[in-house]
Image (tube, rainbow, N blue to C red; front, side, top):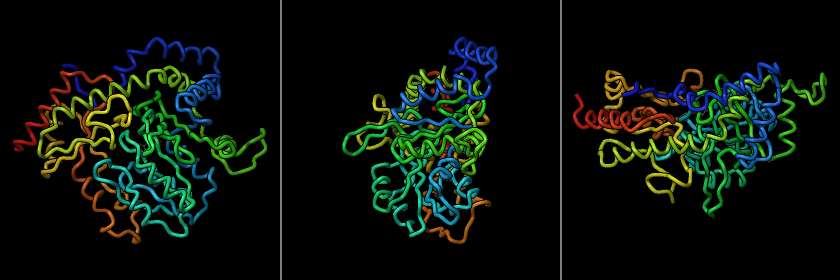
Length: 386
Ligand SMILES: *Cc1c(COP(=O)(O)O)cnc(C)c1O
């Protein structure tokens, strides 16, 4: 059996080596390292893939989030509501801009922000909601857009983990994750579903004016060379990364399908296990999403119910199977983001999930032998924990 990895970037690279190598050498030959033709070409390709008017590439997903908030003109003191159960980047940029983060609980089945908790947290100072499409599945965007409309709030989608996923609205319409709110951010960190070979990120929006503001902001607030109209940042996607991404984008749907196939195999194996909760698909999709792309499995995350999560992690590691706990601490309890405004009783789900979640190896190169090995180890262990 091939060595099991959490993410197999080398294996994936082997399949696209020629295209990627020739694109990279072309950048080297032309030496247009910043803002070369590949950046523009990748931007156009991604706009048509997502069916969104504007893609603005930038240096990474964290910058992308920060620039979304700057572009919308959020000011110190404005409150921004986001999920308590996510990667810290989301709340970090809120803090950096001196905005006020308002963390709220998530739903136990989707791990995504709970619209009821959002509604409860709204005050006259609330300006924006940041749903994070966690682990590859969209948050409840019907409810979130309705709340935002009602209270006149911006919606910034953190789409770092769900690129390529479709969201199906209650009326049957479909849109790609990251094209539903006012603006969205994504990350091309190597392990993301569309990853480059270094850091990269992008912002998406259908709003022409906002796109114009943001294009200047990523480049020192310049709309005309050496005329600085607003305070900006220096955040660029470099040409080598754009060349890698342009070569990988045509494979994104196939990569996501491979992830879903691996997830289906895991789901089938764990189906009747009392102490294991498998990821739940959105309503309308079966147990195993095949055609609708409602879930692109950035992570395959189980809940282990018999308080054996930590010993399962140890057991898997002892047997050469990597795994991850995303995330072990609710953001409202992280040292950097603790705040006496928060009340423990408002976070029952996050407080529970951090004790139960475990993410298994998930990538495009997993084979049946590896999946069987992993599922057998997990099932034996939860039924006969030592
Ligand atoms: C990865 C990630 C980010 C940050 O992206 P970087 O490119 O690493 O800065 C932000 N939000 C979420 C939910 C992420 O998973």
